[in-house]
Image (cartoon, rainbow, N blue to C red; front, side, top):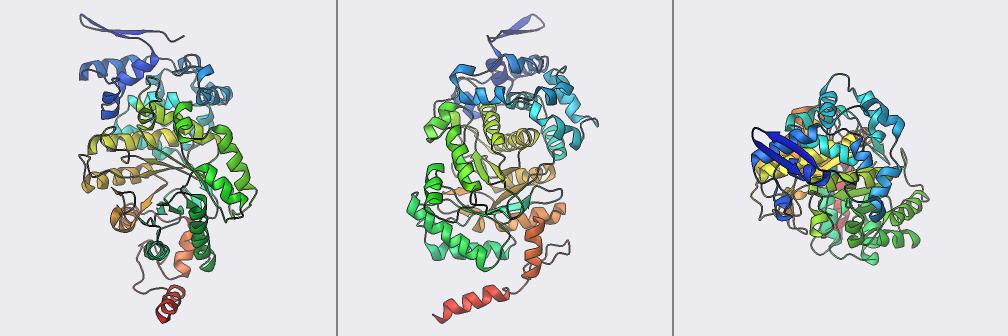
Length: 466
């Protein structure tokens, strides 16, 4: 049973009815929580809630479920899979103590790896609420998380990209042209991933064959994915399509995922089916999850829990399935949930921190919709901060403008910028391929070739000859 919390400042006593309300009131301001009626009513109330939350023992989160155990399979997953042995070194801490410990030199990369299975999503969310942006960056940088399929994602001093060649009519020539464009900029080592304009099994199969043909013909050490519903991917596998990764958008409550049309058993079935294909060469991580603050609220499935905590619970789902990629699509849902550049920046850093702390290979779609109070300079700022924080991958889209999904994100040259200013490199297998193809020399300068590589040039010549 959730207890109440009180805190007195001078002659004023603040009362928080339960842990969920305390967490919501302590959250930095954002429009989604305001829309849900959960936000603190003043800066003072938010500060008091943060002070109160800092005094809450971490053990409270094991005994006081924000969403009842019997009502929600995500809560059951979080509680049933919790590792008490991994939790033991931090079990005596409060939320505030946990923040201080995470920032200390005692919390090395190795130590953080040893305790990650003892941290629940709610603990991660709680400590993030009392951290400054620089705190989120510092701790996330210390969390080293890697995953692998045909390329290895998330190694130190590496930055990967998803090549996203979407097309408003799924025109195969248009998609192929975008793929070529991205590859010539050194993009695509995380995945070549397409959001289909027509979302059905037949179209997904056509797109899978297109990407597989390119990957096989040019021997590209990467993986492909059609971002279709998990049940469509299952049908593609059953029909013999060349499926590398299984994609699904996920939420942090059972009701959210019900609205998306799947449950944990569906994900387990799809993971097993894809593993049976044995298509990985350097690893077996093959799940690709996307998330976003506000999805639970938009599905009317948040149970009175703030959107950032719901987001962290989605990472509890992702962790169960050892994914290759987890991507917070931070500004995509719109200003109803993250109003402006400041809120988008804060959310992106929170999401990245929570995911990395829980042991996930976190990327970020640094993006906004055209009706948000944000612009590309805001995205440049967030992109740079995430690069410092050790983000595993970002998006790569022609001109940073997704002409199918109608939102603004990061372009191929944005990844080149981040690699150059921070000295980051592509995934090692992909880096060797770029050098072999004479696209980008492995000299630490990320200098692109001035010529179209021979194999690509011959293919283009053949097309022109026809």
